[in-house]
Length: 214
View 1 (spheres, rainbow, N blue to C red):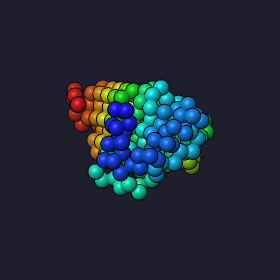
View 2: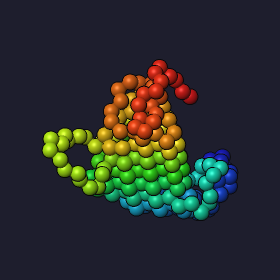
View 3: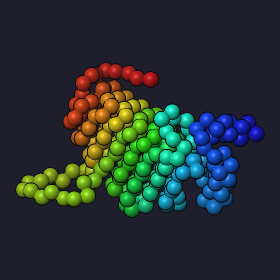
View 4: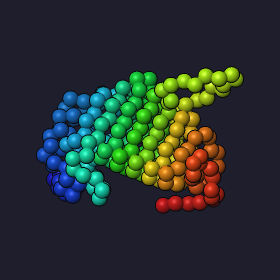
């Protein structure tokens, strides 16, 4: 009863339709054996391709600048894996290609209006905070040819305890080590190796070493 009351209060605060959230959750539990709590304007294509060891909440947490009519769309043709319970903000767009895998660790969350367009691989570690209006893109969708072009791994790898600020754009081949902070509106390409650093700018570079954040 306490869990239902808590869910009701959260739905009321975030302008989520409580009975819709609850009944849809029961339906998904019955059909897919998954524990999902979804705002009424959440659409998921490929729900069977989502793996989680806990509950998944999409769009039901309160964020002051998000409207109740904002739509969330998750198009999961590949695999979307959660290590434990997780929260995705309202207004997000996920497009995960047929052969792609997105793996997300325990703790942390993805905030509103963030886009994941992943055709290869995205790994997000434990306790990572992804702010609003971020973009993760691991494919160009078109090819530019020239002599001596190097073949690079498109995978994006985010370490543990990473904070990615609002408006950041993370592109193919990016590696962000443990404990790092990506400054707002940064454009991250390439592989960083230094842990506990502030990464910022366009193109992004290390602008401060030996930092901590909470």
